[in-house]
Image 1 (cartoon, rainbow, N blue to C red):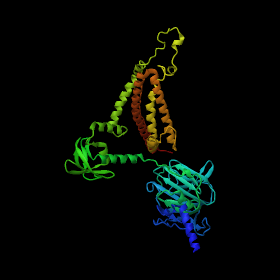
Image 2: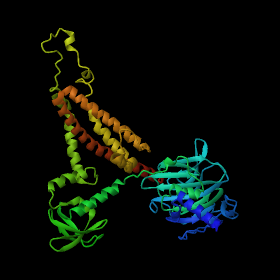
Image 3: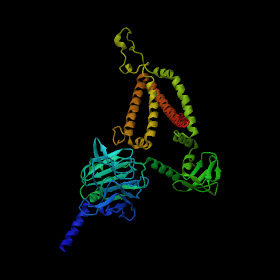
Image 4: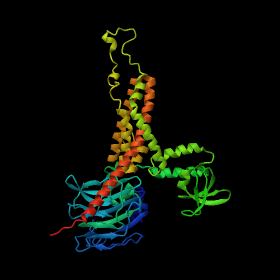
Length: 527
């Protein structure tokens, strides 16, 4: 009786220390005991074939309780080919945990992965600074390196959080962290494509906690645990879509803003039921994720896509002129819109004349400044009466007149380059990431944007200072307004201009490749 009470007390104490271990079956996608078979021990029956493998003793000395993989011959190499799709599209968050022992501590090895590239999810052995490390793939962010590889048993766990673009790796008692934006790999997970032993492979569709990982590790995780928490990154595109739906729900009675406004007979249909005129009224009855059921022209019922409602209608009690202005600004960088190109052409004409008559405009602002060097009533022969003010030595009439014009051009080039580089990180940076102090930057694009932002801010501050030095308060204020408008025009025009150059360059490059390949086929050789 006392023995049973002691066991119950020990179990109760263990549950207090590890309050979350009872949920280890929650979210379990697959569990491979690796006892010489490819059997899935979970309820999902994701059994897979074994290649070049045999049952061996596990880390605790239990016979036939782990699987050793050796070099195979023929078409099959080695590994357990598990039918588990661990791609981000299937499981946005994922945890892979296993016990691993390698026979060789050199050479790249894909231990458990759904491909042999960095953008594939998985734990690997990889080389860094001349040494091989227990590591994890991190997609566009490269490799997350852990401790040096040995031939001893190690507990490894890799946690992927695609929405927050983060990767965490546990190797025995230590935590390692990295950003990670993963790509798509194979829909088959390969376990053991190396010479070594694997045991107790678990795959979860959620992120395990430290107590849960400690339970699997059978020990405490104590090193760098402050690296484990993942900061939530807001999905601004999803948030924007939710805001659009909220606006439609809050204002169900709406007016159309274009002629030949189409109403469809069914959702996801191409059959047009009716055409409405500009200014006609519609009422939203129900909304789903993509389509709205509406009533119009009395008791008629039809369907309109949410995107069309948001972009081409406005609240019935709102202003059509205000909506047109808002719509124009919202779609200013929409390359497929004819209206946007017309606006850019008009801005280009204004920019041309501003360039052409810039020195005359600049002279107008200078007239506001008091540039009389002599003191009132002082003799012009007195050299002390004609000392140039300190700041005017730097901002003279014939120097630095052109440089403020480059602020908008630099901004346009930066936005286009960053958009091509990584549009989601660009959106994150300007929505949340920018700080005067570079906090939370973990990608090269963040530092690039930060450096250019500081340069633009510095140039803008100098431009404002220059304006007030040369034009006084009145002329300086007018010059600041003019320069800001001028640079906004330059930003918009040069953004489209750079885009056109890139498109033309891509077309020329494609034609060159195509013509080169075609011309090679037309060469004939004669003996």
